Length: 374
Ligand code: ACO
Image 1 (cartoon, rainbow, N blue to C red):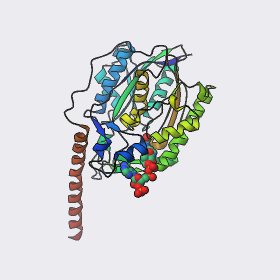
Image 2: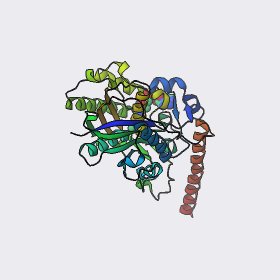
Image 3: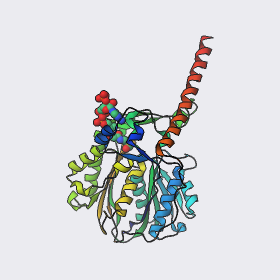
Image 4: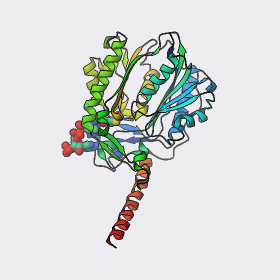
């Protein structure tokens, strides 16, 4: 039977850093609250597009795998806040990378975007439709962030990572998964202002208001990640004792701890990088997986568990067997263009841009009021 081994990996993290102290300069929050409630210390703010981040991560993953771009038969990209919707993002990334023989598909399941994309590509390879795929998790949350809302502004960051999958007869790659969705709870995480519902209403694209029930998401996230993990491991006849490393979605350190406790896993076997990047939505598990390999936390032949959840409320977990090679075959000189601004300066630019719309909204409302009274 075919499997889909992970043969390459790479990340594309934008260089500008936004610290907790930076955020405290424009909203009522502080280092102590953010670290103790979330585990986050800093996050990245991109000065380039989603497609450019994905190009860097994708090119690094291809070099790591030691394969040429034209060997890729599918570019699949998990992302919920893309640069554009039609044409899709995967085609933009494909053109940048020169993957001329590849199909191109976007997957939007919010923070589980990489997980769902990984399962989709694995299924296409295992069923014999194709042999090689580039799977990307990318997100630029900063452009659509409601920076004045302290309930959400501290939680998110931008980033991207990718893996290359290739057909193999070895028992490697995703061996089992469970994907699900608490659709009844889809309204508890709702980014208002993005999507067709808001077309022609006068709300500028990117001018968002986040409807966000943090405590309810917290409960559902823990439940979904534990359920998905338990069912995925059971499909393989495995228990948590068989897992070498858990690489969970990083939305809150307390969520990660709660999931770990319920699964009964030793905290030393849980990979955490939330302090560096916050929650990067669809990029989170991808970046964590790549960093775990790069930092030597993933040994040859290791069995990994990847639990995740996202808006929708989607949830997922995969059990993944890593191959014998955990070092790259090659590298590339590709990198981001220099960024002349700090993370705080980039965010203040976004805030200023949004504030211009506050003014436009005020003018619009005054004109409407004058018309009505006239
Ligand atoms: N700084 C300071 N105080 C704050 C901040 C902040 N940034 N944000 C909220 N507070 C205040 C609240 O106003 C509240 O004050 P009050 O008691 O005077 O009303 C107090 O802190 C406690 O608020 P809670 O909501 O009870 O805080 P909680 O411990 O639940 O933590 C958090 C909030 C971090 C959002 C948590 O609920 C959480 O992590 N939820 C799930 C994570 C999540 O939703 N991640 C994104 C999901 S998206 C995805 O991954 C798909």
